[in-house]
Amino acid sequence: MNSATVMDFNKRIFTALPGLALIGILALVPAALAQPVVAPLSTTPALAERQAAATNSSVSTASGASTPAPSSKDLRWGPINFRPHVSYRYLYGNGIQASPGNTKETGVHSFSPGLFAELGSHWTVDFTPTWTYYSSSAFRDTVGLAGLLNWATQYKIWTLSAAQSYNISDSPLVETGSQTKQTSYITNFNATIAFNSRYSLETALTQSLIFSEGYANVRTWSVREMAHRRVTARLDTALGIDYSYTALDRTPDMGSLQFLGNLTWHPTDQFNMSLMAGLENREIYAKPTTSKLNPVYSASIEFSPVATTQLGVTASRSTSASFLDGQILESTRYGLTLNQRLLKRLHFSAALSHQESEYSATRTSTTAGRTDRIESLNLGLNTVFLARIRTGLTYQHNRNKSNIPGFAFSSSQIGFEISYSF
Image (cartoon, rainbow, N blue to C red):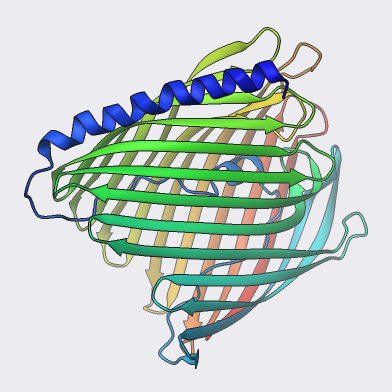
């Protein structure tokens, strides 16, 4: 960044934050008098949202760091409770992109031993390496790593949490059209102060550093402030603002200012709805500086008509920097999910999604205009036996219709997985 850009960035930050704090104070303080204190509903965005949207893998990979199922036994050493886990997955697929316009058939073996640990009552950590082997020589065998450290506590009217993730992956991506090695560091801190049973203020700070071999490195820092008002025990509303700054290597940096509204509704035990929507002003710090207004939203509905059936509907629209130099990625995604228990021991899952991704240039010297339409179907059937062993079958079909030669593909994958969690 040049000095003018830095000064402009600092000016925007210090102009926005005092007004943001004033909004929260004026909205909350008058009503913060002598009522029971309860924890507010959270509207923290998923840390993986940007990565999942922009690094949509065209081949299923091992799940990585995840919390194992609860155990009835402990492997304790002082205050530390260890819970090891291990999984093996095999997939066979066609139409998998080795490079733009070059799709191959291949078998994929993934082996993931890991260790989850609870450190006292406030800390958890998971460390999971993954060895992946391809039967086709068009792909390189890889060693990935997923690590996650979580901390959470509650002190009087404060609820605090923090998370640090570290991930190394090297899989075929839709965005690049090829096997792409990435290293990511994502840091998140959340603080919520509940003034009373109705009013609370939530602050979220996030740092996302994603380094892609051969492509643009994306570094993003963001702050989100949401003022909550709980209307009833089952309805929470919030208004707030989100500011983020993205630094790129060889292309202009960019900033984003979002004005957001949130509604979380839980009218019955069988129905949940969450909606966050707003307007984003995204600025490209080139010469001259350009800006664009974009609608942004994230919505989900979950419905369980009976105890054995769960249905879900999701929709989202977001804008972010692309891993392709000098381009912005605008993504709109819709999805349907079904989870069904069968014969008491079998669990069937199905997910259908449609995503439209548009790439636009951030500088006059960049040629853009790529449009992708990605359709995905995922089916799974799994069961648990001997309390700790999970096994399942999977099927996945992905199809991308792109207006740029080399990025369109149609891929089908079938496989199985077996895992053990202590």
